[in-house]
Amino acid sequence: MTLKSIKYEKGNLEILDQLLLPAQSKFIQVKGVEDGWKVINKMQVRGAPAIAIVGCLSLAVELSTEVFDDKKVLRQEIEGKLNYLVSSRPTAVNMKIAADELIALSNKLYKDETVTAEVMKVKFIDEIESMLEKDIADNKAIGEYGASDILKSLPSDSMVRILTHCNTGSLATAGYGTALGVIRTLHSLKRLEHVYCTETRPYNQGARLTAYELVHDKIPATLIVDSMVAALMKQRNITAVVVGADRVASNGDTANKIGTYQIAVLAKHHGVPFYVAAPFTSIDKKIISGDHIIIEERPDREMTHVGDHRIAAQGISCWNPAFDITPAALIAGIITEKGVFRPSELANCQ
Image 1 (tube, helix red, strand yellow):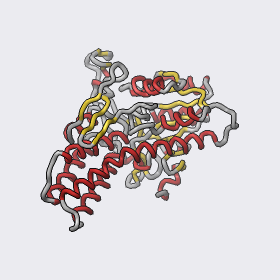
Image 2: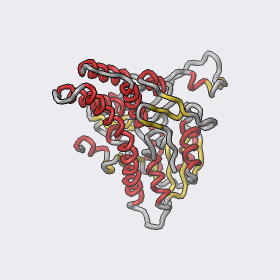
Image 3: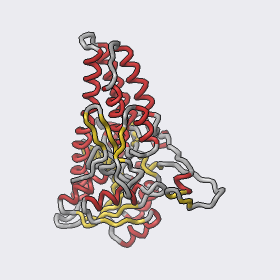
Image 4: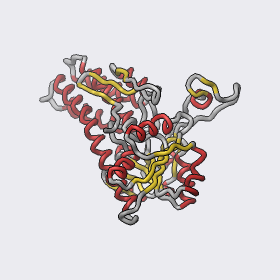
């Protein structure tokens, strides 16, 4: 059974505080949009799909406690609070796409004269709640498509070794995961020999979170530091790299956790296929290339400290981008719930 990082029942939302993992498993309550913004911004919840789900559910929780007699007031509150949630972390596109779709739904319900304010609220909350089930179903489809593409050119009895970066599992989604979903599917097919996960500095999502999930699921895995990737590819015969994505441009350029780009370069040099696994909502057709993706910069403290312990010299300046851009030319395939696409195919896929 995979981990669960989001607990939701109508009117109540709790999230697993990922800042405390792996030392402590503690769920914290999200009482409304302000709490939702804070847990996303502070990275108590992270991963593009989970950010969108938690952000939208925080609005559902808040609306469930309010009574609306005026549809216009409800529509304005929905739009304002969704736009506020989008500002919590700007690089991941899933929250923005979810906000745009929900605002469109709100406008449609507002214009329908047969819908009362209360019915409008109920229908809107129902739509948000459906995101949880859909995300898990999408992740399982990503896992199946990805595993199939990796295995298609290999002998039927061969085992694979996969390298992944950052965290893309149940802790980054509603459940199962994207890149880690592909790994879980390979494991369930008994075709996975081993997984290697990077520590993912400076926030150590690989060491703290991915390693935690792999141990929990009893998947054979080894943790490496980020600077070991070249040596690993030279010595350990890696079959494929599978990572997640926070935003994919229409040309296939992909924003993902800092360090992804250098892994893709090394994969190209060593002839290792490099895959991006992400839901279709991570593809931003409005962005023509990675050059136009806004890259979030994080506080210096994430680099200078581990917990409360300072590891960097006092007075040193820091550059801490949270993401980098992997050019489409380095990507073998983009794995979605609708299939595996080559970067050149994205512009025309629906």
